[in-house]
Image (tube, rainbow, N blue to C red; front, side):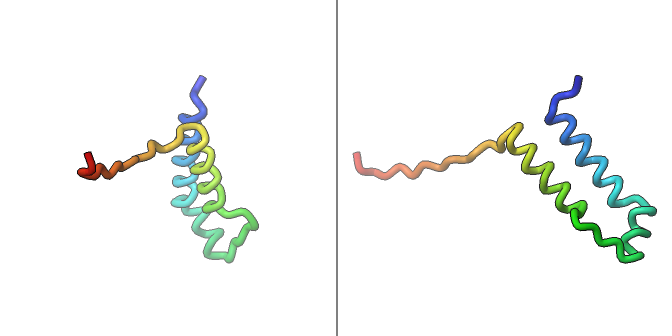
Length: 67
């Protein structure tokens, strides 16, 4: 069984394929305007991916010479 992170990555790739597909492009040319867009789907997947595997936080410490 694939991990949730793998499924998210696969789905993101499929969305990119949909965006580039000629049939989808034709729909856009014919004023296809759904209530929920491909961009919304991409954002939802990004948010889900962050919940599954949060991005590493970078913490910078400033050290003074106050010893």
